[in-house]
Image (cartoon, rainbow, N blue to C red; front, side, top):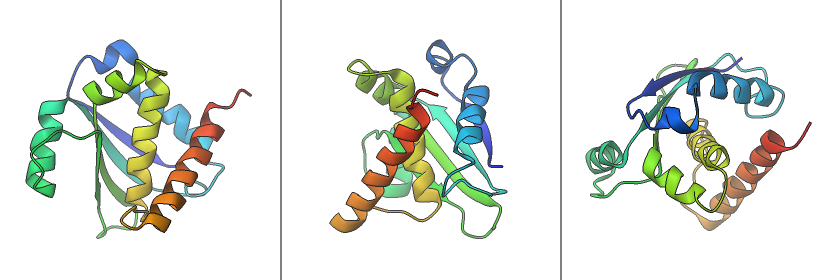
Length: 145
């Protein structure tokens, strides 16, 4: 089972997802049946934060002076701990005006998770592969059972 550590740095998240820890645990439990989640004894952390923190992190680690939706920090030195993900509340909330907040949030953390397990989108073919995989995972997560 994959374990997630949730760090809530921005309280408005609780207005949209009452208990982010339980929400993510349920999603990961559902995903535990499919690759790249299947049969994994892994762990990662997710920071639920705001644009200011995302801008600071983006500037520090990517030399880009603007907020971004999601950042991933893979941790290569440990087989069990995958790394950290940070997600911006404001960007998820803005995008969810057109859609569902939880769906937008799931897009972000899944994107970040795929980076933690080695996917990237530097080349067009890698972008297409990652994008299609994200869609597949999201469809699986949000299908009606």
